[in-house]
Length: 273
Image (cartoon, rainbow, N blue to C red; front, side):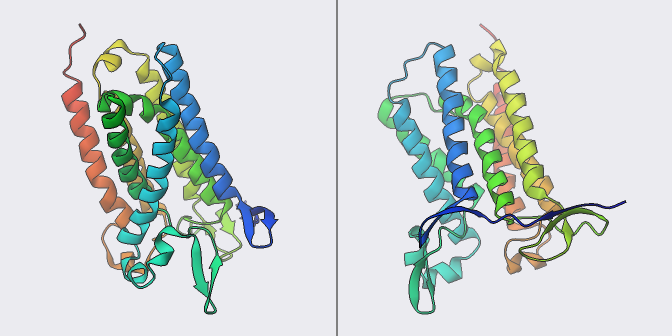
């Protein structure tokens, strides 16, 4: 019995102009950011905290996410190419046939996005005098939902998919080939939604609320452990990874996992007052 899903969805929802498409990836990316923000905003309301400057936090997060993810891809995955084409790092264009054309950003790295967000939050906390770990705990609840939406966008784009299943099941991404593959984008999306549920449940605990950093540590450990494990089923993004024992995504996940575990051990010792 075959359990193969043939996937051939056009990644473009509609052409806004002749040269500017609205794609599922961009729409889901933006929707995920807004939904994550909505979750954090609701947490603020439940804790009866002032909403002053919360809208500014959204701007910081958006800029940090996009800049970090873009620079992360350019540095970690294709440094040689972008050193020769620096204008394409921060502009969504590519030289095709000797002419620059709008193509959207063709590479965003989640690890770079995480680093970018952390830097943005540090700057935000410094400007608005907010406790860094306290804020990260609340943001950690919403971020997995954003990450899940981004992976759904990758699925709609037929990109970042898995290795062949070598069986009569899987998803055939017909825009690339006719081989049944692991739908690793969906694996990640479902994992991130599960992590959201765990973190939201933990948030209700009095110990968690008093141990600033425990939620964030759990978020780092679980999310990047899931990413590390799912990478075993995923096709490498760049050819240089084919000769590596573990790929670049796994290597970059290890520091985040270790930081998360360190925070969990440290903050679990906090006593309820």
